[in-house]
Length: 156
Image 1 (cartoon, helix red, strand yellow):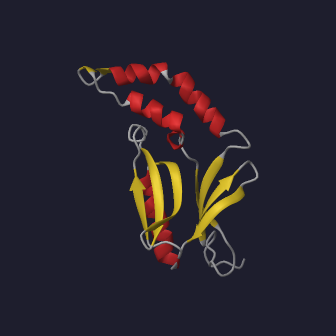
Image 2: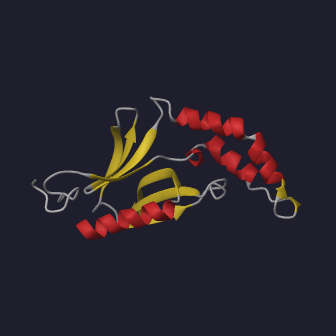
Image 3: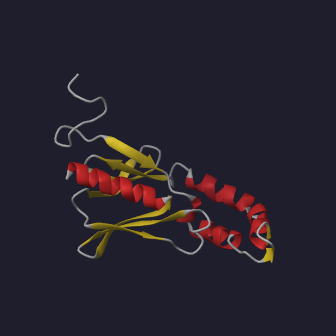
């Protein structure tokens, strides 16, 4: 065994995946529309709201958007390795775009309309104030942001 700690590899030797995240339906325009409808709070009390009725009514649409995102030619996932953050596309996980861990200064979380109800958001990696990479529709984006910054600080 070449590693002192199982599963830990210095970036100089090999690239190792730390975490993989799939985008939510909040990454799509139709998914965000569903989120906006479900976030309507008009109703009687906190439980009987129009948004909850919309949530039930839009289940078929949500399932279609979810199934669409799993199609072999459409599916995307985000991987954090010990060297970079990668957007993979397709079943074979072809690298669509990526940014090195030392290629960004900060990570901002943007929540577009409709994503708040889904607890989703956009991770925007910035270099010198300009957008270098955007990960749309990330579930619980603050957690992934903290993971990226931790990996960057540990390995940087």
